[in-house]
Length: 210
Image (cartoon, rainbow, N blue to C red; front, side):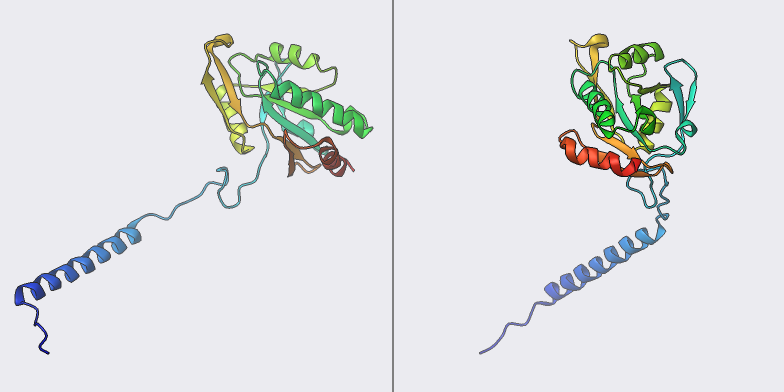
Protein backbone atom coordinates (compact mmCIF):
# COMPACT_ATOMS: atom_id res chain seq x y z
CA UNK A 1 0.00 0.00 0.00
CA UNK A 2 1.42 3.33 -1.02
CA UNK A 3 1.90 6.08 1.62
CA UNK A 4 1.48 9.69 0.68
CA UNK A 5 4.62 11.83 0.70
CA UNK A 6 4.08 15.19 2.46
CA UNK A 7 3.91 18.06 0.03
CA UNK A 8 7.04 20.30 -0.07
CA UNK A 9 5.00 23.29 1.12
CA UNK A 10 3.81 21.39 4.18
CA UNK A 11 7.37 20.34 5.05
CA UNK A 12 8.54 23.92 4.70
CA UNK A 13 5.78 25.15 7.01
CA UNK A 14 6.68 22.46 9.57
CA UNK A 15 10.35 23.51 9.54
CA UNK A 16 9.41 27.16 10.05
CA UNK A 17 7.13 26.23 12.93
CA UNK A 18 9.86 24.21 14.64
CA UNK A 19 12.38 27.03 14.21
CA UNK A 20 9.88 29.52 15.61
CA UNK A 21 9.35 27.36 18.69
CA UNK A 22 13.12 27.09 19.20
CA UNK A 23 13.53 30.87 18.93
CA UNK A 24 10.71 31.47 21.43
CA UNK A 25 12.28 29.03 23.90
CA UNK A 26 15.70 30.70 23.54
CA UNK A 27 14.13 34.11 24.06
CA UNK A 28 12.32 33.04 27.23
CA UNK A 29 15.49 31.45 28.61
CA UNK A 30 17.51 34.60 27.90
CA UNK A 31 14.85 36.75 29.59
CA UNK A 32 14.93 34.63 32.72
CA UNK A 33 18.71 34.81 32.88
CA UNK A 34 18.63 38.60 32.55
CA UNK A 35 16.23 39.10 35.47
CA UNK A 36 17.85 40.36 38.68
CA UNK A 37 18.03 37.97 41.61
CA UNK A 38 15.25 38.62 44.13
CA UNK A 39 16.66 40.04 47.34
CA UNK A 40 14.33 39.23 50.21
CA UNK A 41 14.13 41.54 53.18
CA UNK A 42 14.26 39.82 56.58
CA UNK A 43 11.41 42.12 57.60
CA UNK A 44 9.03 40.73 54.99
CA UNK A 45 6.63 38.11 56.39
CA UNK A 46 7.15 34.85 54.54
CA UNK A 47 10.70 35.72 53.47
CA UNK A 48 13.62 33.45 54.38
CA UNK A 49 14.95 34.33 57.81
CA UNK A 50 11.91 36.39 58.83
CA UNK A 51 11.38 36.41 62.58
CA UNK A 52 8.23 37.64 64.29
CA UNK A 53 8.73 40.54 66.67
CA UNK A 54 11.83 42.59 67.32
CA UNK A 55 12.59 45.88 69.05
CA UNK A 56 10.11 48.73 68.78
CA UNK A 57 9.21 52.07 70.32
CA UNK A 58 5.63 53.34 70.50
CA UNK A 59 3.69 55.73 72.74
CA UNK A 60 2.32 54.62 76.11
CA UNK A 61 -0.91 55.70 77.78
CA UNK A 62 1.07 58.36 79.65
CA UNK A 63 1.97 59.97 76.34
CA UNK A 64 5.65 59.06 76.72
CA UNK A 65 7.73 56.79 74.46
CA UNK A 66 7.56 53.13 75.42
CA UNK A 67 10.43 50.92 74.32
CA UNK A 68 10.25 47.15 74.04
CA UNK A 69 13.42 47.07 76.13
CA UNK A 70 11.09 47.52 79.12
CA UNK A 71 9.93 43.96 78.46
CA UNK A 72 13.43 42.49 78.48
CA UNK A 73 13.84 39.44 80.68
CA UNK A 74 10.10 38.76 80.93
CA UNK A 75 7.78 36.59 78.89
CA UNK A 76 4.91 38.65 77.51
CA UNK A 77 1.74 38.52 75.41
CA UNK A 78 0.95 40.98 72.61
CA UNK A 79 -2.46 41.67 71.11
CA UNK A 80 -3.24 44.11 68.27
CA UNK A 81 -6.74 45.61 68.30
CA UNK A 82 -8.67 48.86 68.79
CA UNK A 83 -10.85 50.41 71.45
CA UNK A 84 -14.00 50.67 69.28
CA UNK A 85 -13.90 46.92 68.66
CA UNK A 86 -17.32 45.53 69.65
CA UNK A 87 -16.41 42.01 70.72
CA UNK A 88 -13.10 40.37 69.74
CA UNK A 89 -10.83 42.90 71.45
CA UNK A 90 -12.61 43.24 74.81
CA UNK A 91 -13.19 39.48 74.96
CA UNK A 92 -9.53 38.75 74.19
CA UNK A 93 -8.13 41.24 76.70
CA UNK A 94 -10.56 40.12 79.39
CA UNK A 95 -9.62 36.51 78.74
CA UNK A 96 -5.90 37.25 78.94
CA UNK A 97 -6.35 39.02 82.26
CA UNK A 98 -8.34 36.02 83.56
CA UNK A 99 -5.75 33.49 82.37
CA UNK A 100 -2.98 35.51 83.99
CA UNK A 101 -4.83 35.43 87.29
CA UNK A 102 -5.17 31.67 86.94
CA UNK A 103 -1.40 31.40 86.59
CA UNK A 104 -1.16 32.56 90.20
CA UNK A 105 2.21 34.24 89.70
CA UNK A 106 1.15 37.87 89.86
CA UNK A 107 0.57 40.41 87.12
CA UNK A 108 4.27 41.23 86.77
CA UNK A 109 5.05 37.64 85.74
CA UNK A 110 3.37 38.14 82.35
CA UNK A 111 3.03 41.65 80.90
CA UNK A 112 0.06 41.97 78.55
CA UNK A 113 0.65 44.44 75.72
CA UNK A 114 -2.21 45.98 73.72
CA UNK A 115 -1.20 47.77 70.49
CA UNK A 116 -3.89 49.86 68.83
CA UNK A 117 -4.24 49.54 65.06
CA UNK A 118 -6.46 52.64 65.07
CA UNK A 119 -4.15 55.50 66.05
CA UNK A 120 -6.48 58.11 64.53
CA UNK A 121 -9.09 57.49 67.24
CA UNK A 122 -7.04 55.72 69.91
CA UNK A 123 -5.09 58.46 71.65
CA UNK A 124 -3.04 57.57 74.74
CA UNK A 125 -5.86 58.82 77.00
CA UNK A 126 -8.54 56.90 75.12
CA UNK A 127 -6.51 53.69 75.40
CA UNK A 128 -5.77 54.33 79.08
CA UNK A 129 -9.46 54.81 79.90
CA UNK A 130 -10.36 51.71 77.88
CA UNK A 131 -7.82 49.43 79.55
CA UNK A 132 -8.85 50.66 82.99
CA UNK A 133 -12.15 48.84 82.44
CA UNK A 134 -10.44 45.44 82.64
CA UNK A 135 -9.34 45.90 86.24
CA UNK A 136 -5.84 44.54 85.56
CA UNK A 137 -2.54 46.07 84.44
CA UNK A 138 -2.32 46.08 80.63
CA UNK A 139 0.31 48.03 78.70
CA UNK A 140 -1.48 50.15 76.09
CA UNK A 141 0.42 51.48 73.08
CA UNK A 142 -0.26 53.66 70.08
CA UNK A 143 1.79 55.77 67.67
CA UNK A 144 1.72 57.31 64.23
CA UNK A 145 0.10 55.34 61.42
CA UNK A 146 3.54 54.58 60.01
CA UNK A 147 4.87 53.40 63.38
CA UNK A 148 1.91 51.14 64.03
CA UNK A 149 2.04 49.72 60.51
CA UNK A 150 5.74 48.93 60.88
CA UNK A 151 5.32 47.19 64.26
CA UNK A 152 2.30 45.23 62.99
CA UNK A 153 4.19 44.15 59.89
CA UNK A 154 7.15 42.90 61.92
CA UNK A 155 4.72 40.92 64.07
CA UNK A 156 3.03 39.47 60.95
CA UNK A 157 -0.25 41.09 61.97
CA UNK A 158 -2.82 42.18 59.40
CA UNK A 159 -5.11 45.18 59.79
CA UNK A 160 -7.14 47.40 57.48
CA UNK A 161 -9.63 50.25 57.72
CA UNK A 162 -13.13 49.23 56.59
CA UNK A 163 -15.84 51.82 55.79
CA UNK A 164 -18.83 51.60 58.13
CA UNK A 165 -21.31 54.48 58.15
CA UNK A 166 -22.74 53.36 61.49
CA UNK A 167 -19.39 53.35 63.31
CA UNK A 168 -17.75 56.39 64.97
CA UNK A 169 -15.73 58.20 62.33
CA UNK A 170 -17.46 56.25 59.57
CA UNK A 171 -15.18 53.23 59.69
CA UNK A 172 -14.16 50.16 61.65
CA UNK A 173 -10.97 48.09 61.68
CA UNK A 174 -10.40 44.58 60.40
CA UNK A 175 -7.42 42.91 62.08
CA UNK A 176 -5.75 39.65 63.07
CA UNK A 177 -7.27 38.17 66.22
CA UNK A 178 -4.46 35.99 67.55
CA UNK A 179 -2.44 36.72 70.68
CA UNK A 180 1.34 36.51 70.20
CA UNK A 181 3.45 34.97 72.96
CA UNK A 182 7.14 35.75 73.53
CA UNK A 183 9.66 34.19 75.89
CA UNK A 184 12.11 35.89 78.27
CA UNK A 185 14.59 36.45 75.44
CA UNK A 186 11.97 38.23 73.33
CA UNK A 187 11.61 35.30 70.94
CA UNK A 188 8.23 34.48 69.45
CA UNK A 189 7.13 31.06 70.68
CA UNK A 190 3.41 30.58 70.05
CA UNK A 191 -0.04 32.09 69.58
CA UNK A 192 -3.36 31.86 71.34
CA UNK A 193 -6.24 31.67 68.89
CA UNK A 194 -9.64 33.16 69.64
CA UNK A 195 -11.34 29.77 69.26
CA UNK A 196 -8.74 27.95 71.39
CA UNK A 197 -9.89 26.54 74.72
CA UNK A 198 -8.75 28.03 78.03
CA UNK A 199 -6.94 24.86 79.11
CA UNK A 200 -4.45 24.72 76.20
CA UNK A 201 -4.08 28.52 76.30
CA UNK A 202 -3.23 28.42 80.00
CA UNK A 203 -0.75 25.60 79.37
CA UNK A 204 1.07 27.83 76.87
CA UNK A 205 1.28 30.65 79.41
CA UNK A 206 2.56 28.23 82.05
CA UNK A 207 5.34 27.08 79.73
CA UNK A 208 6.64 30.58 78.95
CA UNK A 209 6.45 31.71 82.59
CA UNK A 210 8.02 28.60 84.14
